[in-house]
Picture 1 (cartoon, rainbow, N blue to C red):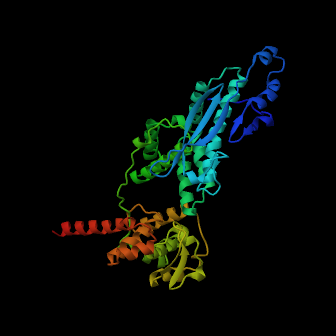
Picture 2: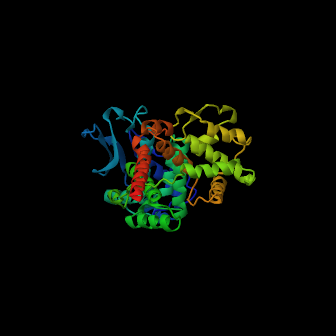
Picture 3: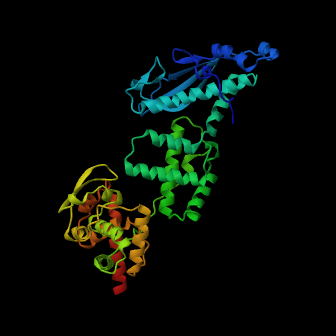
Length: 419
């Protein structure tokens, strides 16, 4: 890995531009005496070979209507073309500037990626100059291809997420997955990411985090997604991404049946319930009868709850209106603090588990169990899957069909037991 001197003069952040290329000769000639004062031999013998870099679009257009982008590096009559992992529609390319037009989709990101590629070449030139080493075109290309492998994967993910307009629910999930990667390894050069690294991370999630297969796979898909993005932005990877295999495991979607719900309702309305369990259990039961996610419930105001409620979906950002049945309203009417006071998500889950255990239900529940409970009980009562899809605000009915499979499995098991 190359290291540059600290506190470089300001001039080193600049370079001469000529059309859509740049020339290093003048800036190095101006600065070299500041680095080699008192070393006459180096001052006299050091010779900077002029190199120019130009960014251009090749005229070839593939079947998707995209053209490849190249760096053209020239020096002393020699030239080398270096293809970038970036493609552009001809109409989105500014030939004069050698950049994406501002009107192009994701223009800012792609132009930053191009600037990063140019910066790599600049860094290599600086290091060789300061070290008084001769740099050939061939060496420059080799160093350029190796430079990106030491970039930090975690920093790349955090920067990308910071620059995107991501919905709050998805943003929390992304940040949570990145935080898990940081707990596994705080700094991860791209050069270290191999199949062996992926396998170690999977083992960490399974053993240390005790994650189930679905959670592990969703985290690995996130890793793969950002590696694909890094590759598109020109970062060299030491892994064949096609070798990272993931699959979706059918989840058993823990839920509560009507008998179990009745036990919790009786406990909620009882006089012997511990006061600290009242608030979390009230929110949990309300979700069991409405299907709302915890963050959607947090946005509701007590005065806005009637025979219907209007809320903004935590996942899609859409505004939805759903009916509120008598049971759901009774939980609100019974306890004045409901939709007035709140506790942390962690305490919410801890107290819900305590309440569930108290009434003799031996299931591993969390607040999200309430949403699964609503979905399965809706189908148990004969509700239509199309209606359930709308109530749960699923964009893809295949997600809703998971609950249908749960009910079908229950019916098969009941038939076998009755036989």
